[in-house]
Length: 499
Ligand code: AHR
Image (cartoon, rainbow, N blue to C red; front, side, top):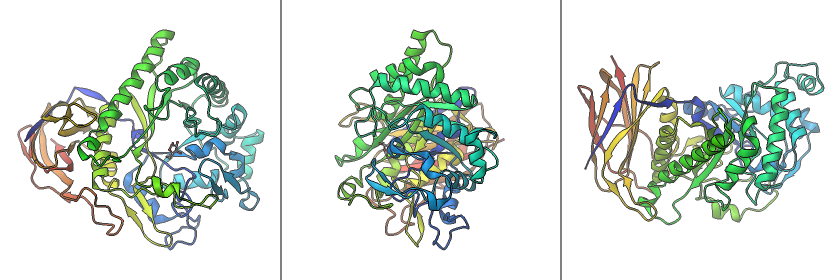
């Protein structure tokens, strides 16, 4: 089979906002306790944070981490998580039916984020709480001093404000499972008033309004329109959440599910722009795809979990090779929509539906999905080039025209390189793949790697290095063309230096 990608230097979708490579840590399962924080661990630093995990987070080059939830935030009292640890209350977390000790709280997490070289995207509780708690948390976090909350922050050890820039106005407020779920009008009003107060406290912040919990929600579309109609003038982004799985054991259909992500994004963009037109606004609302990933492997185990444990192993999906291929397609889809998707968070980062897993008192290891995320996050920086792709297509259960090759190229001016990412969805056939890079003078291939040749159900659970990147020496430069072979079922990254 053959496929072609043609790009032109001047034909750019958008510069990538680095926050496209964000992730997420929720007080859920072992994400925090025995994930990022395990004081007794041999790599733990003086603050109790696992250095081996910080090293892996650094490898992923994650610029933004959403915190502290997720569903958790909708029942969370942020004040429980500050002050001397011995005075902090232990609470029932109704979202996951576990027990939260608050041993890691706001200051500890801000400290971890600094050590992990990432910013925090803070969510406020609009489930059981509202305007007052949100504005107080913001004052505590960002106000320089001389007021009750900002002075309390100083008393608690942080002289300088945290300076948190991006804030989520609640989480999945349309979901019946959400503590304090709301109708679109209820949430639209509450989010508007909360946003108004928060921007009065600090007008430099950016706010994310909750969209639907997924495009499968019965109120999808109507929800987006209504909440935006209320809050348009006060917010900056609308959120999207979506998880995928291969419950039907249908590989062709599974690998095509990135098309669903693309349609979801395009649909939400259309709604944002419809509200903009209706209100005659000159402001554009961009998107925050602040929860996306594969999530289904752990569902059964989670259903059987005993309630009211501290940090039980919840949502510990063990990912396989086919999941890594889908995650590759989803990352390419986010890049294709980089003109409107400015923030995205791989949900989540450690242990909970995560690229990084830890063993208590043991190693930290990389799931197969670690690799495509790591490569796109590190090398997919700069200008996304508008792709013109010719690829044969196939039909699957839910999709009529699925290209065998999913691909994109990014021009990183700073590094003076173009990087091509490509997935071959074909089970049987390799693809002779030509990328024509118009307007560039190509020098050499800096690095060409692939994930290929594995059983689709192979995981890294037993052999932590079972699935890993391998060199692919098949690619070569021919004038302004890059030519080579994409193996069947493969994830490929080719970095080309420019003259
Ligand atoms: O990421 C796991 C959960 O998925 C989050 O808590 C929630 O927002 C979503 O339903």
